[in-house]
Image 1 (cartoon, helix red, strand yellow):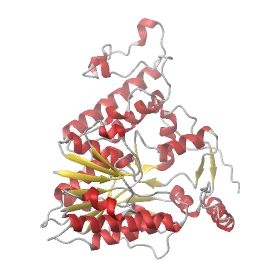
Image 2 (cartoon, rainbow, N blue to C red; image 1 turned 45 degrees about the vertical axis):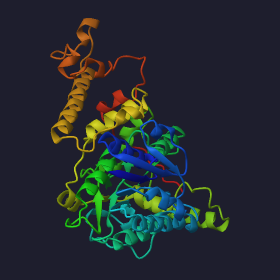
Image 3 (cartoon, one colour; image 1 turned 120 degrees about the vertical axis):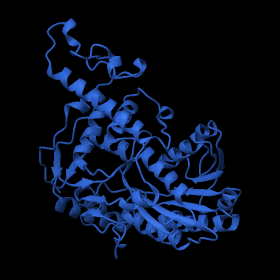
Image 4 (tube, rainbow, N blue to C red; image 1 turned 90 degrees about the vertical axis):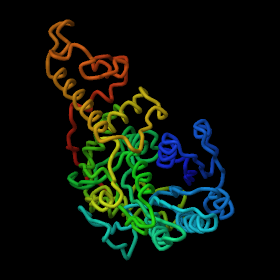
Length: 424
């Protein structure tokens, strides 16, 4: 089977590509840039833009399934840019699939297509599209999602849409780098009371969800023509999680905060100023949409995806954080992080327990004062192989000052921001 991944050089797209290659699929990528790292995997690359209908049709030729991940994300910018890429570009993909005989189309949507600016706690796919969108990205994605679902035809083209929320992990070029940059500049503030719960999904789990959905997308399955929330199914406290990521990178945790009302008002003011001066190419540091996202609950019921196509994670949260920490500290490269889409539940749990054991060992070691060099080894854990089957894979000594300190601080725990600076 040949699969096309639009946006295959991006964060999610490249993870889908790696999993497809790992299971033996022939893979083609459509993207705006050349991708030598994909070509090394034996992937065929076509340089083009989803706004170019001819280029999209050429890329779809001889493919049986298309994973459409290409999009422009963001909270600011001109409507024409979002609409032409996210909406019209998706329309071009649908038309090309029909013209070239593609059998399946799996579209990457977003939970923001139903975000109305208020708390969303455990909502499911019956949640309607809002009457008013707070920025162009979710609006353009909602229009595209509707076209994908409406194009489902059992005899011509099978379609579905996935809504992954807060994709994160090694290789991310947007969410985590922005957090780290703002934190290093001491410009990161908690918005709201710090109690909001959010869904997120590790990048390999998001990629696996796309393959799982495609495998279940048959003429007789319930998947066709449906949209699905996909996440880890375990909401986290947003600001505790952010602090953990900062600690993995050796960056001080968030200490300052601002009320939601102040952030929302500042966002409205900045939007007005940026629109007045037509600053479309420069993103405001705060908008109404961003304030709502940072302060409100937004987590979702993924029961429908679990029921219809067997959604399941291939990486536990504990292992995912460990992998991110190793990547941020330079211990592992992105190429070493690929996870099979069909990894067994037993292996997921084994890797999870492996990480929990390491954290417990570190906690006990950090609590026990070292009386002498001979006493530093924790009783019962004299041999690293008691925890790690592969000695080469063992965690470095937390007391080793030669390595970046970020990952070692994860086990020590995190705290809420405790200093308030409610400024406009």
